[in-house]
Amino acid sequence: MDPDQVAKAFVEHYYSTFDTNRNSLGNLYQESSMLTFEGQKIQGSQNIVAKLTSLPFPQCQHTISTVDCQPSGPAGGMLVFVSGTLQLPGEQHALKFSQMFHLMPTPQGSFYVLNDIFRLNYA
Amino acid sequence: MDPDQVAKAFVEHYYSTFDTNRNSLGNLYQESSMLTFEGQKIQGSQNIVAKLTSLPFPQCQHTISTVDCQPSGPAGGMLVFVSGTLQLPGEQHALKFSQMFHLMPTPQGSFYVLNDIFRLNYA
Image 1 (cartoon, rainbow over the protein chains, first blue to last red):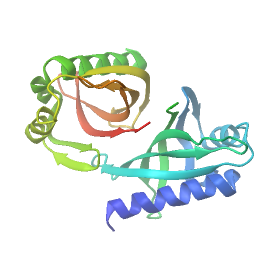
Image 2 (cartoon, each protein chain N blue to C red; image 1 turned 135 degrees about the vertical axis):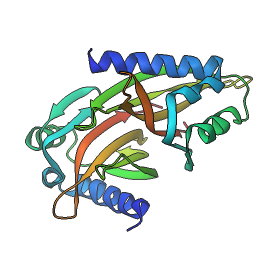
Image 3 (cartoon, rainbow over the protein chains, first blue to last red; image 1 turned 90 degrees about the vertical axis):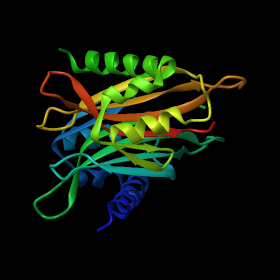
Image 4 (cartoon, rainbow over the protein chains, first blue to last red; image 1 turned 120 degrees about the vertical axis):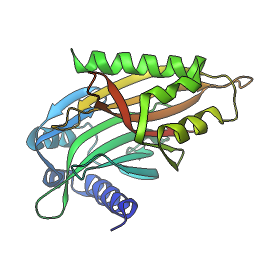
């Protein structure tokens, strides 16, 4: 399968899950997974979901502007780099964000998120 | 050495070299290295330097806002995620950018850039 198509499918799945049912994002992470969210470092699927579900907005809407991807080396991983906007309820302007994911293959032929770094780019 | 310190030192070295002597950035890449620059995919140290030195501005000034880093897996690599601004000559406003690097260790105890993805975040 075309890596760009895999990356695009992952990104669409990730943000639609984030915007509708943040709790189930845990399936995409494992115990070794790392999230750096606005500089805060969090490790492990359970802790990552706890962080994402505790963000101070119950609803949000991600809109993707760009998706870039590259293979990350011989282990079969893939780097996915996203830019877009995040609309929070009651806010007039959407926030710009950038996020990168390092996807690693699972024995089942799928991917999990090993690395996740998120930053808002205040406009 | 603290990975955050390594990442910070790399980032300072990379952008000061970019802003003063773009030609010598080639030392940081190898033949397997990949750059995605505003969606354009380029591979190999020589092609990457050719791209960076052909950008339509002879001088520029990067200012770093944030640097995040995470280990990328058992091969000893490191993911470095940067946000900042890029000031071009004659432009009133600096452009926001995000960039990620995947650094891999060399046998000499240094790092090279295996993956590099750059995007402007138009404000």
